[in-house]
Length: 440
Image (cartoon, rainbow, N blue to C red; front, side, top):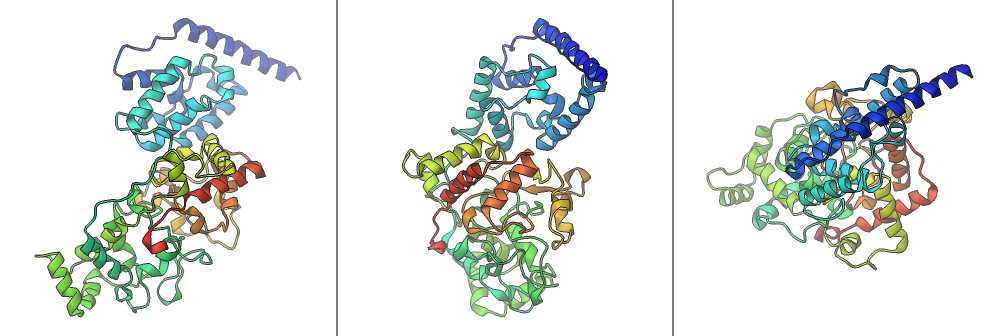
């Protein structure tokens, strides 16, 4: 009891000293470009103390009670985002959404930090400056925006890409095509009863096949980002021993050149190049660029039709934003723009069922970069058409949207959502199914 009283006395005394210092020496917002004003505001509110790869902890971080708690907060904060390195003139959509959420819901700094560090809370003027900068950078209101009705593409090359997308001759034994694992008629992902994709000779891959719909809006391709764009992505599966066979692109092109009509088409559409690894994968990528799914009920809602979604679905969208889902699931496809830790709170892989053995694909981004700090970071999937793409997560471990939402709240937020909130968010997610000729 005496130790507790001493700890409380130290806590209160420290907070008082810090408050006097902060209110006595708090600087005014500089008369400078908006970006510099934003950086100044974030610094004064200690955002870079915790959200940094090199946290500059105050002197009291070594105190009993305060120190361990601050170390815990700093650990979680950095795994959420490294604001210090990401708040630049070229700031990305996800970091903008994180700042937006912090000022809209007054979540940052967290209550425990403010308890010690009085005066670290955005005031009305600071919020207004940050919000205006966010709107200017985004070019639209809110954390998400509509999918464009159309994109530019070469119709003939896309048609050639469609034939190749469905061409099993690309695989070593002639049994697997791109369409085998990316079923365009059913959400562009694998079948719902397949946890991971099945490749040549019945071999199982290490991950669940993500949808190809709206994939051109991804910052990079694959769960671990190892492909820079759609053309580079199309190269990978064809020479993967588990997916399409242990072969080279020279062998694949040699097989395809046995088709006289196909050779003529490539010579016509790619004069001077003909049928090569680059043109085959380029044609497939051209098809995939056309695979957008506009005009969902949610798009109509964003365009001003308040009756396009129900009150329950509207509530779900509000809960989706309130619970910070829209910080990572942001932008055109509600995701696909960043790589985030799967296990900010708790050990996802330790908790996972024993039936799913750990494999190298579970390393996430580290499998591409080789950096230990990227372990268990995965590309945030876009949520467009998510109701059609079960099972969920990179390992296909969760069969329902309800289970996926519950797990995200647990491992990303460290909280348990109410059943009502889960149902509302799932109702909202069901409004994200758009339209594409292949899905009709």
